[in-house]
Every structure is written in structure tokens, then in C-alpha cells.
Amino acid sequence: MRIIPDFQVLQLIGEIALGIVGFSAILIGLSRTSAGFKPPDVFRIQMLTFSGFGAMFAALLPFALFNESGNVEISWNWTSGLLSLYALTGLIIFPLRMIALHYEYPSLFPLKLVVFQTGIIFLVLIFSVSIMLGFVDQKANVYTGSLMLLLLHSTTAFIRTVFYRVD
Image (cartoon, rainbow, N blue to C red):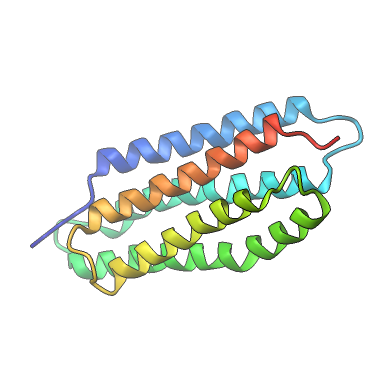
């Protein structure tokens, strides 16, 4: 069965991700004080850009890897493999830093949020590895779901950055 991604949906996800990152950059830039950003804000901005740009580039990746004459399985392996690598990188970078910030700023980084944000990246890793290893039949749907999770991650980081400020 040849299951290729829905390129219109991927384009929409890429546009939404770019919109979140762009709008965030404007709001964050306008709300910046002369003292600059405090460590929690810097971390949340890094998380926001990681997941926002991750969703955008992962949405664009199939445009480059899928073609009419190519092998669909190889394209899925590359696409999901790169997304897996990206999610794994996020799991290496963010959870430990978030836990450290939880101890320093417990009201800004409650444990529920740490688990939620880490869980999203972990689910993206699990879903993308499942696609790569052939554990799922509906690869396009699972891949799209992974990108939606990255959008949720980015949106959560955006909301936390804009509305939950460091005192």
C-alpha cells in the first residue's frame, strides 16, 4: 500500500508553525525590558523555537523526500528517522534544564508542566520511531499527529512565555 503524506496538510502545519514562531518573536521582542531576559524566559523561548521550527521543517521535509518515482518506504524511513533524531535531541537538551528550573522557579515550572512538555517530545520520538520501524500502517496520519504535538508544545511554550512572567 502506497501511503504518501497529504502535502496540503503539511503545508498548513508548516504555515501555522511559522506563524507561531513569528508572532512569538514580535510579542517577545516588544515585551523585552532593558534588563534583558531572565533564565526562565530564555529557556522558554528556546523551547518555543525548538518545537516551532521543528514542526515547520518536519512539515517541509516530505516535500523534499517524497517524489513520484521514488521508493515510499525509503522516504518514510528518512523522514521519520530525521524527526526521531530531532526529538531525541530535544529530550537530551530540555528535560534536565527544565527540572533544574523547576527547583529554582517552582511556580513557573510546576512538575505537571515538566512532565507535559517532556511527554510531548517523548511521544514524538515514539511515533516517529514507530513509523521508521514499520509498526504503524497509517504512517501519514501518525506523522501528521507528531507534527501536531510539536505545535502543541510550541503553543504551550508561547503561552507560558507571554503570560507567566518572571517577577
